[in-house]
Length: 101
Image (cartoon, rainbow, N blue to C red):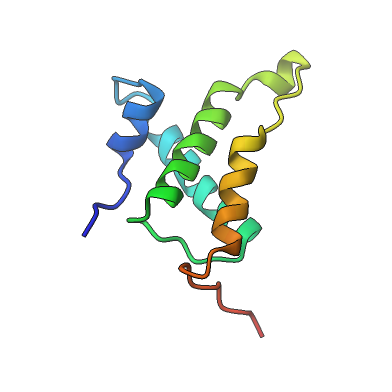
């Protein structure tokens, strides 16, 4: 069985060596998981490669563009994350989120 996505996996993708930003990166990971679940309507699968890539990609975007709004730039998420979320939302291999009463 594949391993679950870890903080170290995301830090390697971001090319972050120190632990100084671990809390920020963990928040980005949690936010990415919640965002993708809400956008796709699917339950997070921590061992799936597409989910892992989507989380790393979204974390990277948010990490690299965290100051864009202050600088007046528009840091829209590009087609890649949209395509990954669309795949997750349409793929029957992923469980649907439970519907709240």
